[in-house]
Image 1 (cartoon, rainbow, N blue to C red):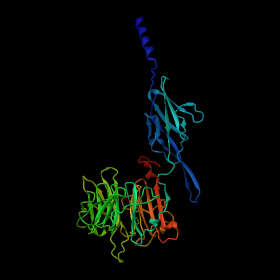
Image 2 (cartoon, rainbow, N blue to C red; image 1 turned 135 degrees about the vertical axis):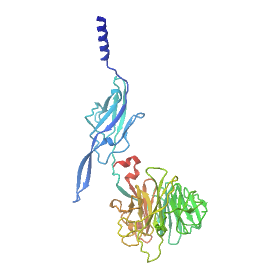
Image 3 (cartoon, rainbow, N blue to C red; image 1 turned 180 degrees about the vertical axis):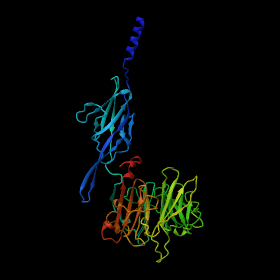
Image 4 (cartoon, rainbow, N blue to C red; image 1 turned 90 degrees about the vertical axis):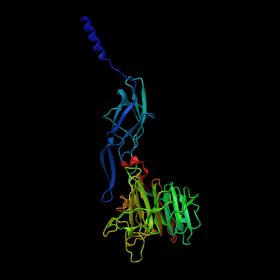
Length: 469
């Protein structure tokens, strides 16, 4: 019995022993409530600041174990106070977390109840529970400095060749902006630019450029002139293709299809890069006949992948229907839509924005052009048929593939741009777009050639950042 008691006492003593580990790693890092400050204008025009709190746990914080970095890729909201943020930090096997002080470089024991200052880069040290090992992490928590929806213009240098244009059209292909224009003498010039700050003359694809139209399709610039389709990747070297049928106007395209207007005014499609063309399918039925609203001039094609299927593309065609004379008072642009899906072929459908008293129509404007931008479509044009606004004085934005069009005070055209006699719009494939205008008869050099680069912050930010201000 004495032996058994001694044995039992020995076992109880072993249960009280403390086990330690040599692991040093941060296993989770979560931000708590964050105070945010905003400044707004009162009705009296004075600044007023208010604050609110939001949960930082909605922003994912990444732990890079290889490079020993802790950071948030999706920046916190503008105005976030990073000087006092409660943080929950977990370590492996009860490692001890220490923070290096910003002022004296000493180390302070981490506490989940104490706020942390993230206005500067911090160093977090994890000491193993056996006290023999440690690992340092660099911590960077950042917030946006600008609002996602803030918009700005930058004036780019002018160009005498652009100033002489009386007609112009622009397109983007392969990250280059192309501008085709004609002066009063009928001389046609094709220019290209990488960023709108300098323009280089391109080699013309042919001597006969009668009725030339162009579009950017699949990384290449396509030009259709005098019955031949020309393609280039750099504006210097061209390849020529003879379409299977004559075309009237090259419209644009997506990765898998090209579109044009045929000699009979119908929409044509090519699936082999422009060699073979056929009439594309349109909505039809006993009570459906929208052939009178097909686009004929000032055509733009905007193609975007759907949010759910990267191989399914939404295509919107915006343009003006054929002008039939002074009695033609049709005041709206025409909008057609198609879904490109190889597994389920779709047809073109007409989007009616022309009925009386509809407040969200896109006016029928001379020289109209449209581009995809900011998860929607931007359009601008010259004098409207109804004459209620000044040419090139408004940017129209559609968030819903052309069903509704809006003007926004936050996205006005630059001051003085309405003096342009001819203008166009083009996006650069890099998050910016350009308004390009010319007025050869202007007395001011600033008005003879106007090149403005516009940008909205959320378009330039990484995709993940779009969910936060």
